[in-house]
Image (cartoon, rainbow, N blue to C red):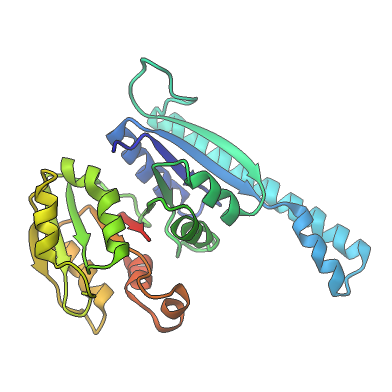
Length: 288
Protein backbone atom coordinates (compact mmCIF):
# COMPACT_ATOMS: atom_id res chain seq x y z
CA UNK A 1 0.00 0.00 0.00
CA UNK A 2 1.37 3.40 -0.95
CA UNK A 3 1.52 6.13 1.67
CA UNK A 4 -0.55 9.10 0.54
CA UNK A 5 -1.68 10.93 3.67
CA UNK A 6 0.41 11.93 6.68
CA UNK A 7 -0.86 13.44 9.92
CA UNK A 8 1.55 15.62 11.92
CA UNK A 9 0.30 16.77 15.35
CA UNK A 10 2.25 19.84 16.48
CA UNK A 11 1.76 20.82 20.10
CA UNK A 12 4.53 23.41 20.37
CA UNK A 13 7.72 24.50 18.67
CA UNK A 14 9.81 22.24 20.92
CA UNK A 15 10.97 19.38 18.63
CA UNK A 16 8.54 20.69 16.02
CA UNK A 17 11.23 21.59 13.49
CA UNK A 18 12.77 18.09 13.58
CA UNK A 19 9.32 16.51 13.28
CA UNK A 20 8.43 18.78 10.35
CA UNK A 21 11.67 17.92 8.57
CA UNK A 22 11.17 14.20 9.17
CA UNK A 23 7.55 14.34 8.02
CA UNK A 24 8.38 16.22 4.82
CA UNK A 25 11.16 13.73 4.05
CA UNK A 26 8.53 10.98 4.22
CA UNK A 27 6.07 13.04 2.16
CA UNK A 28 8.61 13.61 -0.62
CA UNK A 29 9.54 9.93 -0.58
CA UNK A 30 5.92 8.91 -1.19
CA UNK A 31 4.50 12.02 -2.92
CA UNK A 32 2.16 12.29 0.05
CA UNK A 33 0.00 15.03 1.53
CA UNK A 34 0.77 16.31 5.03
CA UNK A 35 -1.90 17.62 7.37
CA UNK A 36 -0.11 19.55 10.10
CA UNK A 37 -2.49 19.71 13.05
CA UNK A 38 -2.50 21.95 16.09
CA UNK A 39 -5.11 21.16 18.73
CA UNK A 40 -6.04 24.11 20.93
CA UNK A 41 -7.19 23.36 24.44
CA UNK A 42 -10.82 24.25 24.98
CA UNK A 43 -10.82 26.77 27.81
CA UNK A 44 -14.16 25.39 28.97
CA UNK A 45 -12.31 22.27 30.11
CA UNK A 46 -11.19 24.20 33.19
CA UNK A 47 -14.82 24.77 34.25
CA UNK A 48 -15.08 21.50 36.25
CA UNK A 49 -12.61 23.02 38.69
CA UNK A 50 -15.48 25.12 39.96
CA UNK A 51 -16.61 22.07 41.87
CA UNK A 52 -13.38 22.11 43.83
CA UNK A 53 -14.06 25.26 45.81
CA UNK A 54 -12.91 27.92 43.34
CA UNK A 55 -14.97 31.06 42.98
CA UNK A 56 -16.57 32.17 39.75
CA UNK A 57 -14.04 35.00 39.44
CA UNK A 58 -11.15 32.59 39.85
CA UNK A 59 -12.60 30.27 37.22
CA UNK A 60 -13.05 33.20 34.83
CA UNK A 61 -9.46 34.26 35.40
CA UNK A 62 -8.22 30.74 34.70
CA UNK A 63 -10.26 30.55 31.50
CA UNK A 64 -8.83 33.88 30.31
CA UNK A 65 -5.28 32.78 31.07
CA UNK A 66 -5.85 29.44 29.33
CA UNK A 67 -7.21 31.15 26.22
CA UNK A 68 -4.25 33.54 26.08
CA UNK A 69 -1.71 30.75 26.48
CA UNK A 70 -3.48 28.63 23.86
CA UNK A 71 -3.56 31.54 21.39
CA UNK A 72 0.14 32.28 21.90
CA UNK A 73 1.08 28.64 21.45
CA UNK A 74 -1.05 28.31 18.33
CA UNK A 75 0.49 31.46 16.86
CA UNK A 76 4.05 30.26 17.47
CA UNK A 77 3.36 26.82 15.98
CA UNK A 78 1.72 28.33 12.89
CA UNK A 79 4.63 30.74 12.46
CA UNK A 80 7.07 27.82 12.65
CA UNK A 81 5.11 25.91 10.01
CA UNK A 82 4.90 28.92 7.66
CA UNK A 83 8.63 29.62 8.06
CA UNK A 84 9.49 25.99 7.40
CA UNK A 85 7.26 25.85 4.31
CA UNK A 86 8.83 29.01 2.89
CA UNK A 87 12.41 27.90 3.56
CA UNK A 88 11.94 24.41 2.13
CA UNK A 89 9.68 25.19 -0.82
CA UNK A 90 6.74 23.16 0.44
CA UNK A 91 3.70 23.26 -1.84
CA UNK A 92 0.75 24.39 0.27
CA UNK A 93 -2.88 23.42 -0.17
CA UNK A 94 -4.82 20.27 -0.94
CA UNK A 95 -3.33 17.79 -3.43
CA UNK A 96 -4.53 18.38 -6.98
CA UNK A 97 -5.21 15.84 -9.67
CA UNK A 98 -2.43 15.78 -12.23
CA UNK A 99 0.08 17.56 -9.95
CA UNK A 100 2.70 15.19 -8.57
CA UNK A 101 4.82 15.74 -5.50
CA UNK A 102 4.34 16.37 -1.81
CA UNK A 103 1.94 18.96 -0.44
CA UNK A 104 0.98 20.25 2.99
CA UNK A 105 -1.69 22.14 4.87
CA UNK A 106 -2.04 23.50 8.41
CA UNK A 107 -5.25 23.25 10.41
CA UNK A 108 -6.44 24.28 13.88
CA UNK A 109 -8.90 22.21 15.91
CA UNK A 110 -10.20 22.96 19.40
CA UNK A 111 -10.58 20.04 21.78
CA UNK A 112 -8.65 17.36 23.64
CA UNK A 113 -5.48 16.52 21.75
CA UNK A 114 -5.58 12.78 22.39
CA UNK A 115 -9.18 12.48 21.17
CA UNK A 116 -8.72 14.67 18.08
CA UNK A 117 -5.45 13.04 17.02
CA UNK A 118 -6.77 9.51 17.48
CA UNK A 119 -9.84 10.27 15.37
CA UNK A 120 -7.95 11.99 12.56
CA UNK A 121 -5.25 9.31 12.53
CA UNK A 122 -7.85 6.70 11.54
CA UNK A 123 -7.88 8.20 8.04
CA UNK A 124 -4.14 8.80 7.78
CA UNK A 125 -1.72 6.26 6.36
CA UNK A 126 0.89 7.34 8.90
CA UNK A 127 1.01 9.75 11.83
CA UNK A 128 4.33 11.44 12.57
CA UNK A 129 4.80 12.70 16.12
CA UNK A 130 7.61 14.74 17.68
CA UNK A 131 9.87 12.96 20.10
CA UNK A 132 7.88 12.47 23.34
CA UNK A 133 10.78 13.41 25.62
CA UNK A 134 11.45 16.77 24.00
CA UNK A 135 11.56 19.39 26.72
CA UNK A 136 8.22 20.87 27.68
CA UNK A 137 6.43 19.18 24.77
CA UNK A 138 5.31 16.38 27.11
CA UNK A 139 1.77 16.20 25.74
CA UNK A 140 3.13 14.88 22.43
CA UNK A 141 3.29 11.51 24.17
CA UNK A 142 -0.49 11.75 24.63
CA UNK A 143 -0.81 12.00 20.86
CA UNK A 144 1.57 9.09 20.42
CA UNK A 145 -0.37 6.79 22.73
CA UNK A 146 -3.70 7.91 21.29
CA UNK A 147 -2.59 6.79 17.83
CA UNK A 148 -1.13 3.53 19.10
CA UNK A 149 -4.11 2.51 21.20
CA UNK A 150 -7.10 4.04 19.41
CA UNK A 151 -6.45 4.48 15.69
CA UNK A 152 -5.33 1.01 14.49
CA UNK A 153 -2.78 2.85 12.31
CA UNK A 154 1.02 3.11 12.47
CA UNK A 155 2.84 5.99 14.09
CA UNK A 156 6.33 7.25 13.26
CA UNK A 157 8.23 8.83 16.14
CA UNK A 158 10.58 11.52 14.83
CA UNK A 159 14.00 11.72 16.47
CA UNK A 160 15.12 14.81 18.40
CA UNK A 161 17.43 15.71 15.48
CA UNK A 162 16.07 15.24 11.96
CA UNK A 163 17.72 12.34 10.09
CA UNK A 164 19.84 12.80 6.99
CA UNK A 165 18.03 9.94 5.26
CA UNK A 166 15.04 7.74 5.95
CA UNK A 167 13.96 4.33 4.71
CA UNK A 168 17.21 3.41 2.97
CA UNK A 169 18.55 0.89 5.48
CA UNK A 170 15.62 -0.59 7.39
CA UNK A 171 15.56 -2.70 10.52
CA UNK A 172 12.55 -4.62 11.78
CA UNK A 173 12.37 -5.82 15.37
CA UNK A 174 10.71 -9.23 15.56
CA UNK A 175 9.54 -11.18 18.60
CA UNK A 176 6.69 -13.27 17.20
CA UNK A 177 3.84 -11.30 18.79
CA UNK A 178 0.68 -9.95 17.21
CA UNK A 179 2.03 -6.43 17.71
CA UNK A 180 5.18 -7.19 15.73
CA UNK A 181 3.05 -8.85 13.05
CA UNK A 182 0.97 -5.67 12.70
CA UNK A 183 4.21 -3.70 12.46
CA UNK A 184 5.46 -5.90 9.61
CA UNK A 185 2.22 -5.42 7.68
CA UNK A 186 2.57 -1.63 7.91
CA UNK A 187 6.29 -1.83 7.16
CA UNK A 188 6.01 -3.79 3.90
CA UNK A 189 5.89 -0.77 1.56
CA UNK A 190 9.04 0.60 3.22
CA UNK A 191 10.85 -2.72 3.10
CA UNK A 192 10.03 -3.24 -0.58
CA UNK A 193 11.81 -0.03 -1.56
CA UNK A 194 14.71 -0.16 0.93
CA UNK A 195 18.27 -0.81 -0.20
CA UNK A 196 18.95 -3.15 2.71
CA UNK A 197 16.75 -4.83 5.33
CA UNK A 198 17.72 -6.61 8.55
CA UNK A 199 15.55 -8.58 10.97
CA UNK A 200 16.61 -8.06 14.59
CA UNK A 201 15.72 -10.69 17.16
CA UNK A 202 17.02 -11.64 20.58
CA UNK A 203 16.60 -14.37 23.14
CA UNK A 204 15.29 -11.98 25.78
CA UNK A 205 12.95 -10.34 23.26
CA UNK A 206 11.33 -13.36 21.59
CA UNK A 207 7.83 -14.46 22.66
CA UNK A 208 5.79 -17.45 21.56
CA UNK A 209 5.17 -17.24 17.86
CA UNK A 210 6.89 -17.46 14.48
CA UNK A 211 10.68 -17.16 14.44
CA UNK A 212 12.87 -14.63 12.65
CA UNK A 213 13.57 -17.29 10.00
CA UNK A 214 9.82 -17.71 9.48
CA UNK A 215 9.53 -13.94 9.01
CA UNK A 216 12.34 -13.92 6.46
CA UNK A 217 10.56 -16.62 4.43
CA UNK A 218 7.32 -14.60 4.57
CA UNK A 219 9.04 -11.40 3.45
CA UNK A 220 10.69 -13.22 0.55
CA UNK A 221 7.22 -13.92 -0.85
CA UNK A 222 6.77 -10.13 -0.96
CA UNK A 223 10.05 -9.51 -2.75
CA UNK A 224 12.00 -8.56 0.38
CA UNK A 225 15.18 -10.51 1.14
CA UNK A 226 16.49 -9.50 4.57
CA UNK A 227 19.42 -10.76 6.56
CA UNK A 228 18.93 -11.80 10.17
CA UNK A 229 20.89 -10.69 13.21
CA UNK A 230 20.52 -11.74 16.82
CA UNK A 231 21.19 -8.99 19.32
CA UNK A 232 22.17 -9.18 22.95
CA UNK A 233 21.04 -6.99 25.81
CA UNK A 234 23.08 -3.85 26.37
CA UNK A 235 23.59 -2.88 29.99
CA UNK A 236 20.90 -5.34 31.00
CA UNK A 237 18.38 -3.69 28.66
CA UNK A 238 16.66 -5.44 25.76
CA UNK A 239 15.74 -2.06 24.28
CA UNK A 240 19.34 -0.89 24.55
CA UNK A 241 20.54 -3.99 22.73
CA UNK A 242 17.93 -3.49 20.01
CA UNK A 243 18.96 0.12 19.39
CA UNK A 244 22.66 -0.79 19.44
CA UNK A 245 22.02 -3.45 16.79
CA UNK A 246 20.14 -0.93 14.63
CA UNK A 247 23.03 1.54 14.90
CA UNK A 248 25.55 -1.17 14.01
CA UNK A 249 23.56 -1.82 10.81
CA UNK A 250 23.56 1.90 10.01
CA UNK A 251 19.76 1.89 10.01
CA UNK A 252 17.89 5.09 9.20
CA UNK A 253 14.47 3.57 10.02
CA UNK A 254 13.24 1.01 12.54
CA UNK A 255 9.90 -0.80 12.72
CA UNK A 256 8.60 -2.58 15.82
CA UNK A 257 5.48 -3.61 17.64
CA UNK A 258 4.57 -1.56 20.70
CA UNK A 259 3.52 -2.57 24.21
CA UNK A 260 3.42 -6.36 24.07
CA UNK A 261 3.02 -5.98 27.83
CA UNK A 262 0.51 -3.51 29.24
CA UNK A 263 1.37 0.17 29.02
CA UNK A 264 0.99 0.49 32.81
CA UNK A 265 3.49 -2.29 33.42
CA UNK A 266 5.99 -0.68 31.05
CA UNK A 267 5.55 2.73 32.69
CA UNK A 268 6.18 1.25 36.14
CA UNK A 269 8.80 -1.40 35.42
CA UNK A 270 10.24 -0.20 32.16
CA UNK A 271 10.21 -2.18 28.92
CA UNK A 272 11.46 -2.35 25.37
CA UNK A 273 8.87 0.09 24.03
CA UNK A 274 9.57 2.64 26.74
CA UNK A 275 13.34 2.37 26.31
CA UNK A 276 13.13 2.84 22.55
CA UNK A 277 10.74 5.79 22.88
CA UNK A 278 13.09 7.54 25.28
CA UNK A 279 16.42 6.74 23.62
CA UNK A 280 16.00 6.23 19.88
CA UNK A 281 18.01 8.58 17.68
CA UNK A 282 16.47 7.38 14.41
CA UNK A 283 12.87 7.38 13.11
CA UNK A 284 10.89 4.53 14.68
CA UNK A 285 7.60 3.27 13.26
CA UNK A 286 5.40 1.49 15.81
CA UNK A 287 2.20 -0.51 15.65
CA UNK A 288 0.04 -2.13 18.24
